[in-house]
Image (tube, rainbow over all chains, first blue to last red; front, side, top):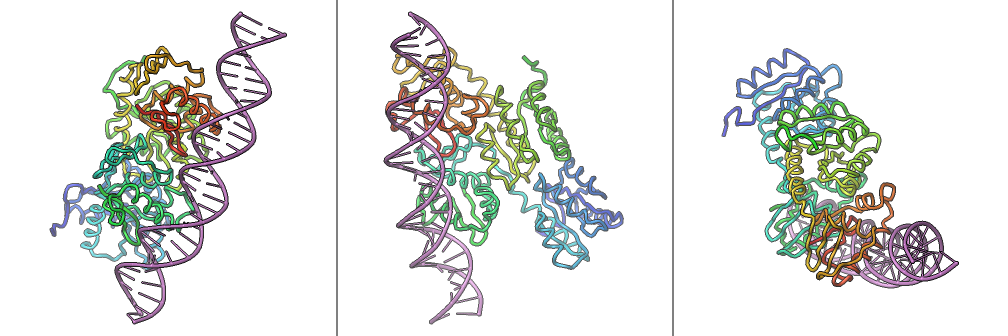
Length: 234
Length: 234
DNA sequence: CCGGGGCGTCAAGGGTCCGTCAGGGACCGG
DNA sequence: CCGGTCCCTGACGGACCCTTGACGCCCCGG
């Protein structure tokens, strides 16, 4: 599938205070079937992001004022919309700063339009399975997990979980189908300051597998992503 | 009683002292046909909740002052309106505190707007049957509990309960099937300021089990959730 | 072939939480 | 004044849970 533009879900917000570059980007993107909105200030960018619900945001960091990262932080305060950052600087520091602040991808100027288009498509595609369950009851094989009642059953029999076990399982189930990074798991379950205690994860995933999995040695629900994190699969 | 004008189940109160985030939320929610009211202080939140009787409340906990939990307690003092909590990722403890205090669900920032919308719909949907289930008589095994007449029978014979015992049982039965956090129990039965007196819970759950359970050592109705709360099971 | 990193497993310690019991004090009715 | 009921409080034993360290395995790269 080498189509240059839009599958459904192709609304992009371009944030750039250089009106000329913004117009050039808009023309190119529209030519590839993107529905483009342009914002030339940080405040307008935040309003547009809230109002128009873009599928992806292109954010130019190469601005005279360094408000680009602030705009990114303002969006990341509540939204998970993918953000692709543009920067003229070839220094690696800006790149890591942007990625640290929550950017999803990074393109350095000058860039080929094909590359930007490819990265936009990739960013949207990655964000697609972001649907998170709100159904309080999740069934996975012989397991039945009730997030509201705080009860997990296996073949109808209630399984007793300790508070920490439940907390870990809850985070994984809420993001079922998607990998959850080790850092996020540690922060959500144990709180900040435990980023590096990966031992905890090994211990408690093992305990959960012993209580929940049919064959703890060959888990089918609590999947390990080596070097990255864990995933709960239905 | 409030008038029943408009479609039911779409009035939401947003409580957030960050005006920018509150505005972004309001824009998004209104775009999805919610009737939005915004409160930026705890006092205003309580006033609005009492005056406008929203169908669901979005409460941001990530505030400089920690009054978020107080707002939740104030609401829970008289209302059962579902509350969805917004929490910063790095504050895992606040999350469990909120659920303990009676929050119905939570969303960690950053979040996808779709996720928040889904959770709001789910919270409203869950709260609907609770109101319809105004049947004041609950039967659980050999127990028969009449919430309206304040009478509990076991095999047809009336069981005498002290006022405190009844008050505790009533809270648990009204939330039957769901775990009730320790904090919420203490606040509902003994009032605010008794958040930490978990001894009371141990003493009175033991007394209730002695009067109600078939085998107090192996309870089948008054279930303990270690480190979290208690649950009444039918 | 060898070394290292990441993962799963296990066991033991110290600490926390729960269930239990008994006693003192407050309140009420006789 | 007195007896009863109820609530609060503290203490204690035991079970449970969290943490921590050590060990073996596998995979991968040198």
